[in-house]
Length: 138
Image (cartoon, rainbow, N blue to C red):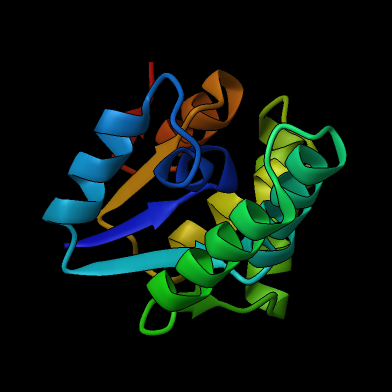
């Protein structure tokens, strides 16, 4: 099963918070992890913010970054193609989304994800609206 993770969901794999157990369960059930290429800098940005806010140390930051890069070494990374951009525009025109959220929905469609995992309610609604099976994190 190809499971596509929005960064809001995948971050919970690395930072223990509400929804972490669900994300770990989806990771265990997945045959293949999938994410948009933009998820990587989004997650690194979140880790950097935690470091700047002194919620994690520099050593913890490096460990999180290494874990992420190791985890996605064999993941399906959906590139930002003209098809993804067009699908994102279509999603924006029919759902109240932010631009990056639309890109993740579009990337999940383009890579034929079996399940779309997100912690964002509006994004989950849009993903359902375009025909994706959604796992909304609580």
